[in-house]
Image (cartoon, rainbow, N blue to C red; front, top):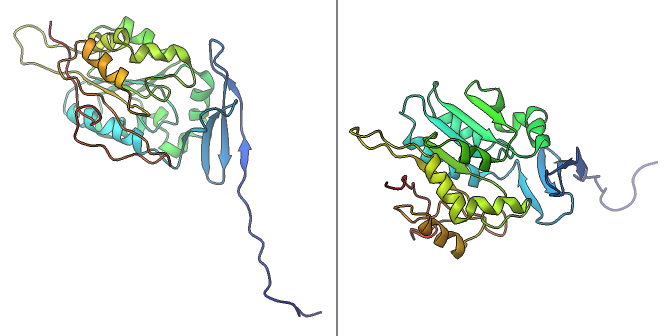
Length: 257
């Protein structure tokens, strides 16, 4: 029987979130959940607080976090880079792109499940950076590495939590305190006496502009008191940064002895 009604309606396949896993955050920090949404992946807190923590479609802030410091040390032989927070691999991947073949990149990730996801379904989204021989993934709190490795790194990049106010894990607040920033300074390389000065570079992604964090940077005795900020707009897109020292991304050198 032929069609005698109005315009024929076409069925549209609706995308929906598919839960892939639930993994606990150590020290009673709740749980993280990776979800698949069409061709994209999303990570959320199981509680739903904070909305999408990260996704594979929007990673401009991770790219920006990496670009300045890694380009500045790209020509250094045997450069050592520390990344706090593996996430979806979008900080690690561009770091490897900028560095030489003899570089070493340590990525510290507190949540074992996040490491497993990057070795599994998430890996291809960032180009499988964990398969690069220059990569070492440490299932550890980046704070422990900062305390243990004085003068150990050419670059330190913190992409932990959503910035100075811990959302997923309150212990992360220490990283953005005066003591935490001072530990970052001590973990950056310093030139041996009599040699040309070599700067270590620190960079931090800050989810929103925080006056307390800017004051902590100054109190931690950084010679350049600029926050390493890539702010996000409410839509999740990286927000444009102004040329103010409070919110522009700039390298910061090791404190003078």
